[in-house]
Length: 390
Length: 128
View 1 (spheres, rainbow over the protein chains, first blue to last red):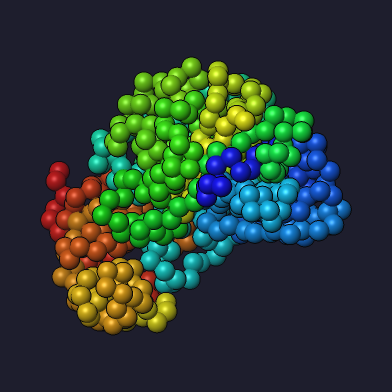
View 2: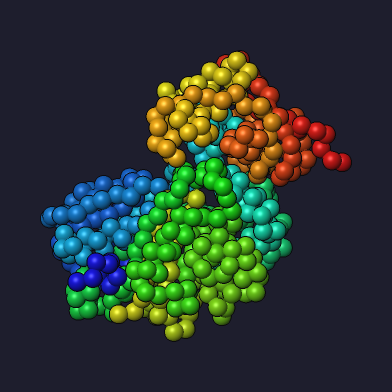
């Protein structure tokens, strides 16, 4: 047997709550609703679940979800660090547990009231801006460098400098995402497309990022059911094969602040992930019809296209300006509207969209999809998947 | 602050910008950590930096409010002439005057009568 993860596990079910700004329910209820929906989608009884994976930051204990759903035994449970970088790695964990026979049915989940409770966008400050940052705690906070938008903006400015990119180049990502969200009834920004002018006129959050470069914040939950290809073949939907699943942390890696590398205009951890995706699957960029590229902030979509080999380094702005990332283009991205347009569920809603594209059931379905790339959080140790047809 | 970084903040209190240096292979590193990633030595001392550098990248923060800062304010990633980089502010410099490549020099600012921070000012008058 080949020692690779390719095609050793499949996604059999996806489930989600509605995406809102105030769910009015506990995160645990959101997690349980999403998990139950994913199991119903798969046609698998809750009692058959024997593995659960989530993010370190998820506040819902797998044991609590198991209690709520009457899951009698768990033989694998694991958590991944690094915020949104964990998203696709939860599926890798699940696939490894299935491939090695540790578990048979593994649920990967993420659920939170990220908008109505603790907002990540506020950064490393107290719950209100009146609470001082302790000084000096590290190399950033004493200088007022406390928000995710600001950490990304520092990379974005250097990328602009190196490759002569502009704010409009970032804005086109937002325009594409919102165009796709506009025709997705489940997207928060359903029927609310934007123009590049809207992007340019939106207020500064942290120069060079406008408001419309920053993804929304959301309440909601998503769950994904992973099982063996053999089991998946007998279920409600055709199996969505996990053709590759990779994690990556690269040289001189920090979490959001890898500013000490010779070059900070790339995302070497995503390059490392991409190399593994192609090696595991035997595929290349030309074999991918659509992609879900993590879009907490627009600037990092550009180096993702470059690191994954969809275009040359520094050329992403031309690739985007030529219309390649919109429906009908060479590589439509974030066909659900992405996190900018659909919801910010820490990348897990993107995995669900990747599954729908392979099944052929997406509202913005790309024609003849054989393979989808899905990526996880950028600027942090990250992960990605290739999903494909059985 | 921990045992790996105390030397830096002690230096700042004395008006010195210190860079951690491997005693074995002399490689510089920042932020500080216990070993040299090049030769794996645990032995280190520090170099007194000239305090000269240039803006490698920068941002202008507008939202949300940050305690102790008047909005908008600039945060820069400074590349020191010795080669390492460090984050700091450019107090008194209008954010719209900041440019990538702008030469800067270190200064030391008291914060809330409690801490000293390394900060940065233009080395030459910004081009008008």
